[in-house]
Structures are given as C-alpha cells and as structure tokens.
Length: 335
Image (cartoon, rainbow, N blue to C red):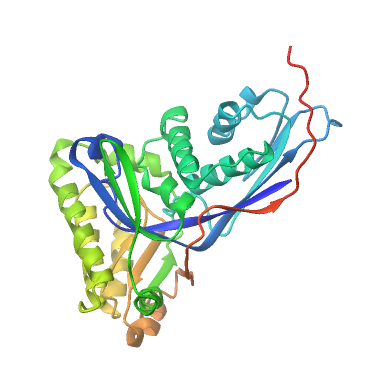
C-alpha cells in the first residue's frame, strides 16, 4: 500500500503567463507557494476476490473490469499512461475541488507519485511535474497553465520562470523572519463558489491578442514582487499593495474572472483594513486571499464573518510518500 501527501498551492503573481501558448512566444513567470492543506492518494493492488478488477473512490466510487470504463479522466488516462492494472485508489483532501488552489493538479501529481511507488520506481519532482502537465494538458485536453503541477510537485515559495525551452524553479531568497511575517499577514476565506478552472480558462481565452498587454504587465509585476520579498530594505507591506494591482489587472483579462458577490466581499475586506488581495485560481469562485497588517487582521476576519476563514501556514515539502508497504504483485496474463 502507498499513501502520498501533496500540498495545494496559492499563486500570487504572474497567473496566466504560465499558459503554454503564451509563454512559448512571450516568456512568463509566476510567484507561488504551497501551504499546509493537502490531498491524500492511497493506492494498492486490489485482491482478486471481486467481480471487478479496479476500484477508484473520490467524490464517486467506480468499480470496473476495463480501465476504459473509468469515468474520471485523470484516473483513466494516468492508469493507461503508466500501465496500471488491478488497483484500489482512494482520494481525499483537506479542501474542496474546483476552488482555485490547483486541486486537480495536486491530485495528478500525488496519483502519479503513488503509481510509481507501487511499481517500485522512483520519480523525482521534475518527472512528476512534467508528466502531470502532460496528463492534464495533453491526454485529458484540459485548458490551463503549467504552474499548478510544478508547485505541488516541488513545494515551497518559488519563482517559476517559463520560456520556449520549458521552465525553471527558483526558490525565493527570503529571510525566515520576513517569510513568517508574510505568512502571518495573509488571510484566506472560502467564498463557497466552485467551478472548473478549465471552463474559466476557455471562456476567458487568456491567450487572445487583446489580452497580451495585460499579461505582459502581470509578468512585469513578478519582478517587483520578488524584489519586495527578497530586499529587506523594502517595506513588506508593498507586497499587499501589489496584490491589489495584480487583482485589478487580472479582472481586466476576462469577464468571468470575478462576480458581483466576489467584488463586494473584496471591497469589504479592503474597507476593513486589508492592503490588497486577490481571488485565487482562474476566477469565478473559490478562495479570497488578503494581505492584512496585524492590527487590522481581526477587523477583516469579522468583516468576512459570513465566509469560512481558513487558517494556514506555508509548507516546503511538495509531494511526498508518507506510507510505503511494498506488495508482491504478479500481473494477470493479458488476452
């Protein structure tokens, strides 16, 4: 039996520039971090006592004798890609799916990590990120960028650069005290709205020519944000003010990024003392993140009292195997 633990991510700056059809031509970069909310994937070989050969449990439970009959596209395509047979897979998570935190990609990375371990093979973080990107973007034909798979595989607070040759992961060089202050000053709330990120991406079509100017500005904000985090002579509160800038830019890239309700909550947070914030993910719902100075934190939490407050801390581990019990498995003869 294998159990993997894979973190979710929050993206601060550069979102949209991680779309392949944008960064291959223009370059791109994001600043993101993983935090201490996780998805867990358990995989083992299914004993041969049943009239089905594979069982997968997520929001639904599927029992099939033919992998092609699995309805969940990520699971079906991952099993075919890595030639997995006769397994029982279960998925559970600390936070809901379709909420803007890269949950689908975290699942993809954690599942691939578990599959390789079940085969007795080691897969490094880059291999897991690369194959999760291929699984979601090519095999499943899901619209979206590359940052989620990379962040959940590697973990930590990073700048991820994208270019025609691929990507590069560079940890943000920030002092422990400054990083703790940043962690303390961020507050997150669940809006209660969930949606498919790929649907938002398709509706907004962020690669359209008339949006490239906005994406270029969002790309340029990454350099500013990195300097704020790494240069101790710069006021860390500027990070919060810059979040407000990137949120307003992001809203201008597509009509489905925000809603009247989300705008109203954001305005309430700012009026209560937040310096800035953003909706996490592709847009349309999910989690609202604010940067709040300590003296205003309680005010903002009270102002958002009808939303669910989600305490969190940064994490640095990325995907990992937390339980490993090797199994003896003799494959059936395939007809």
